Image 1 (cartoon, rainbow, N blue to C red):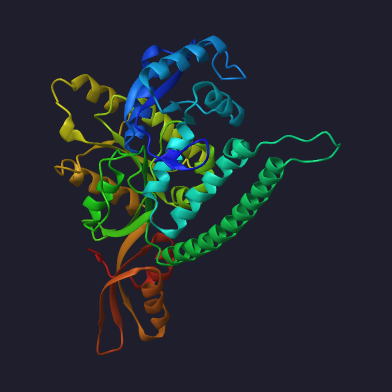
Image 2: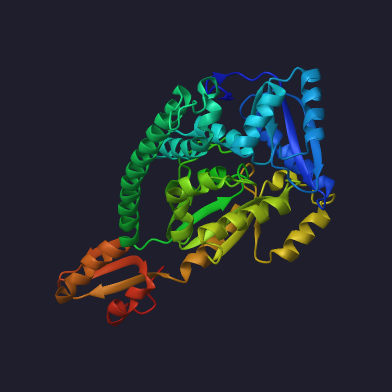
Length: 434
């Protein structure tokens, strides 16, 4: 389902995809981009009847492509009986209108496709509001497209305005009011998220964020590690909302892991902005688990896209553990060169399969090392006059054992941030801990 020219919802039955290849771009790269657009469109159940790749030296203002090429595409669309034209590159509102006048069917771009996918995936209140906000920002400059049937121009009298212009101005004002309302409500939800984050900080439990390209297995990894019921599907943007789960590592170290929304090439800036309150979990986490699909032919592009989005969020300098997922789809013999290359480029990375469990033990050991630098397990014997340290252990750490002796002393086995070590050092039991 997509937005048509008159802003109603219509089921598209025959779509044509248009890819743009800059003159200095490898044709294989352009083909990869168009293949990904086809996968995005498939998530909206839109049948594709044709694909066109346009080689372009310089974008043109009227159609983005040259006029001659635009007319050629229009003729091809008529031959294919297409009812929608979908561009992989962003179109300006005027270019969109020009194309619709030329081909007489709806014309959309990659951003509108992704917006529709996000809209179909959003479930929580925050995600729904974020998608609506992004869509309104996208639609605001396109109101004249939506109201072509009322587009009367100024009349002969100076300053007079036609009905269509008045309607457009009214709609623009209403959209701006709605945008302001959404931004206010999202700000309140962001404050609520910050309150929850402060609670996590008070517990001093290490926090990692799982990031990566869409459909690489981030939610599957969190499900595998936590055993909690998390929605997992083999589709792009299966989950939009951050999900945080508490797991316990084999060394009894507690860890919070957050699954974030997946990235994609040419992710619309409006969506990055709208989902920053969600994606900031990656910025504020102690470390990142960056998941890559080892079996994907677009592995390099997915790595580059993920880094670009993290850079835009200001999280590119975070301590990061690289995890290659989907090893069950790899043949160690025929893919030996691929494995050798990734091991050389990403030393210290880990190779797993959330489907078979391969490599999960290695991943857990690495997580123990990453969290062990700031979390300590202590066994202490506290006298009655140090009762405040018992309360501190409960407030700032995880108490595993708590026993009181006849003399009033408390023996505690607990886990806490290493910044608390000076407080308890005088009371440590020799050879204590686990």
